[in-house]
Length: 569
Image 1 (cartoon, one colour):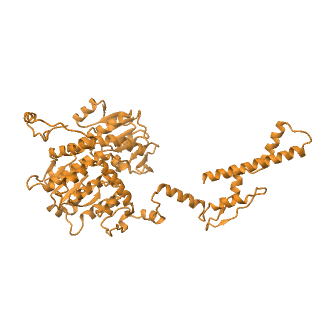
Image 2 (cartoon, rainbow, N blue to C red):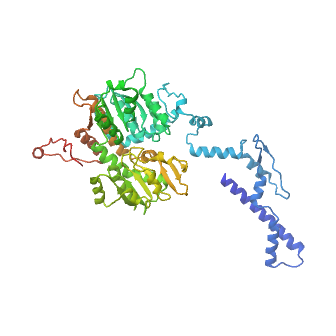
């Protein structure tokens, strides 16, 4: 369209130039008794040019006028002296549809943002809550609640891409497929629903398990992945952008199914475990164990254990070596920068950054920011972690001492109310505040709901909180986990955690009676080492093997485990 309009403008300009030249010749030959000087010729040309409509005006005069009521085309009024070109008018009119240019531009903008070419009906469906729509997959099944089942093909491609990086789970499928170690397992899951966790779900199914799944986070669900799982008849209840009420409704739909009773729980944050304790405590009679991934969920389980209310064994995946040293460290090191760029458009060089907490997540964040030229300081309650921060070259500070100067504040503690209203009152204008810890209560977002503060939603996951004096802070993801809500995380690292979860489920489900009491346990060291060995294959790495004499000297089995349970890597 743009190229054709340009050609029309050039044609009109050429005609105008020719007409001006002809007029100038007549003026020079007939009107002037004496030859004109160059200056006189130029002045005469300007006079003639000023009386002609511009090329743009001529094009505008040739355009059709659209009736605002019914879209009918009527002839545009012609200006006096306008050059008539029927061929040009016909060609231009042939490119305009009955619905007019406004409709044309709307369809173009839609096609540029919707590769599937969805209809107006589909757009309207997206505005309806999934709870209010009945959807069925291609097999006629409807035991799921997701955003849009029509996204299934796209989600399947996402899962296939993730499988390429998650080679350990593929190897686990091949190694254990024949014996089906999870045959008879009925798993209730509450984790992030992404392409990577979908590979875990389907691995559990290959190993013999049945499951029902909800999301542990209202923003992190990939709708297309949920659709792909639903298309394969997996009961999934999740969509991106759930309300708090939707969140608990989805969990209840997983649990409350007549004739289906779970015997295992895979949790990330403890919400599924909490809901069953609160609403369906009788179900724990058949549950063999809980596998928990996050620090928040582990805190909840320890509280139950200390109070004598933990009635099943629980496996602490969060503190397993493979989770701590790989997922928490390397995943956050690679995703923090991308998350900040995508949300706040941050330039890192020279920025002053405060990282609250120097555990594995904090170590990953600080290392990434330091490498980009940021001036990073750390706050910490643990003297051992604090000493590590100092030895790594970071300044150890108290929040109140630096909040007036820093440009970015990142929480990585797993604790509550790390950043409260009093802290945010001290922050400078434009300070970016976000959370990389598991809990969504590290930043006291509720305290920002007072009448004197104005919330300005800038774009997805970005809000400006404006104080009465005009100062504003930039809050990302409403204080929820930044990288999981606003960006992507490395698939390979998530493969390590997913494999650890699968092995923890196998261990608890198949453990003989009496091996695990009603307490919280770490993953056996042998399983940690097995997870690591599966992932070495993708690096073409080759382990050195102990000789019998060396194994005897160290007092070890030459095939492991190679470190005692208390060893800190």
